[in-house]
Length: 411
Image (cartoon, rainbow, N blue to C red; front, side):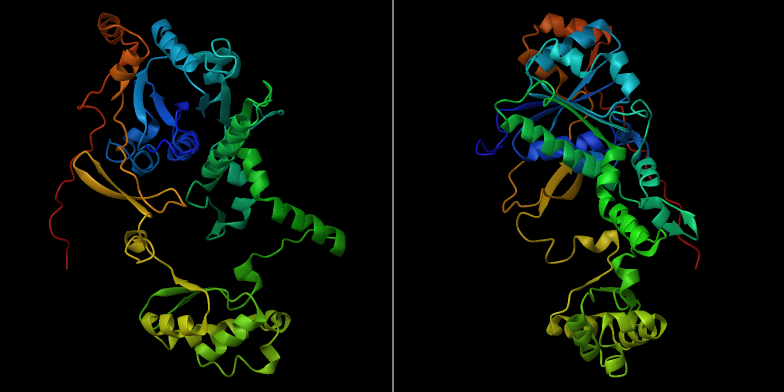
């Protein structure tokens, strides 16, 4: 890791599971920090999500970290944790509030051994009447309006990717960096709570302000439609060879270029030149765009829209995303070997070169090494291992179940 990175020399202790806290420490690691990922004997939940073994979350967001396994329900395991806290700059976790108190990892617990520690708790809800309630990414979506707008066959549904978890992790990094940069940071500044619910509120701020605006102007609540619903010609359309293309038709100038590029003279006439007129004739305009796109293969669409200077993209299935030339430019992908398998993991944005790094740690892979660095002697480490207060790497745990050959598919 380059010493020129802004967080070189900083130690971050992560008690993370699933996405939010591990995503935050993933960012901090990319900024040069040493991240020690502490897991219980049962491991991070994402260690056993795919055929009994690690999921993509571990591979994508825990590479470059050190793995330590502690049983914080034991006095000895808790003692090791507090020694780590005393050596660290930041503790970040996303344990449930009751669990954090039971295990002794609250801000007060950590500050007792390190008064200058920055303590960040990513939780369901920040201060308020629901501060102890549990929430996950989809619960935050449900509670802040996102899910009501995303329906599958009429049923409110989660978006899919855990964006609220990832944004909460990003907001945590911003707050942590602000505390680090502030020489006059108070204890309150160094005690950070990031709620998934509050993250969702912030992400929905535009829509929440919009519905208030419409209520006051119109005398009734009315949602501001998203771009692809408000602007005919803005959305996904099927080409003649069965590929979806997403058109970025934002302005009247874009519309004029689109109708020319797709040979749509009937849709480019004066009656549809302005967005307000296209909205009034939404069904007619949408039918014209569908017909215009359906005249061409994707390759032809790509050539025509590119020549016209219009924004567009093919709607890519995941298995083809990394095949694009843009994705394969230097600095975009990190090659990782993990358990004999090879991965290309998208790199932290803004990189021009990918520095060599380590794969994600196995559960307890660095326990003995980290204990030695804390000053534990060999016999003391052996005693902790024997009591189960700490654990080292066991190659028999969290292995992927073999894929059985189901034979040829019926024709």
